[in-house]
Length: 399
Image (cartoon, one colour):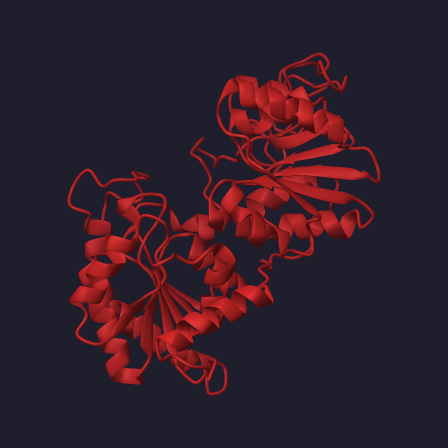
């Protein structure tokens, strides 16, 4: 048993406020209440058996949605008869609905209080039994609380969010009280585990719908890149902010070197608002580089492009997790964010980080000279790619 009542094996810690939950009536314990000794995890209230309907509030980031798929799969396996409805950003709909573990999708209602109240009434009409709240904000928990869903599980960040949950987990800390950095796959699986749902492995799920595959092939064919073309998908942007972005000149130099070594064509897949960044890479490269940006690919089409690739080179952003879920070789440049959040499935990845004292800083925009990214060189990336592909062995990389 870890310090402060955290169990490092199952990651649970009951963070009760005392008394009974105003909605469900489930009683919670204070950490200093009789019957709970510090250094031991208080007992979680039991979740009802065999829920008929489960509401899952997804995380906002694309990569996090991919990393929570083991938790979704565990829910499906544990309650095969249940209807599982996921809520997330509207642009995530098609990617999420392609999963076998999800039966329906609800679009995020927005941030306005009136929208949240209206959404709470909508959820109440749906009569869900469980709310699995993988989004960790107060706003993400509010509609499920207002809907009086009997079981509401998630991480308890802040007094208000804790009050809205029946099954609360604390983010684990190390012996000195410092936040413990660990895989997001494990982080989300702890929520379902707190409901008595057994893990179903750590493999991430991502399906490529056939219409998306056909759409990407059509666009590649139009650029002279038929089925026999050998491609590298290059992810130049990052929704988190510019601090996560490797310099365009570094990407261009890497694309050139990999073309000269292997004859592979680089294809850029910018997201909305990243088109100019991709065009800068195209302009700086000596050899032909294609940017698919008019229009940009949706998430299912991006998955189809990744699937066609011999290699993916990427910033530490959502498409990197998508590529890992598809089992592709990935070389990733990691800057301001602690790499422990994505330290999983490393056999087919090479993770590049600069040894600088200021990382991780978690700043969306670098306040200094961006050294955590600029000091990762194109030569290092190309060497890592060659080493990774050599380790793959003949026949392991898509021909």
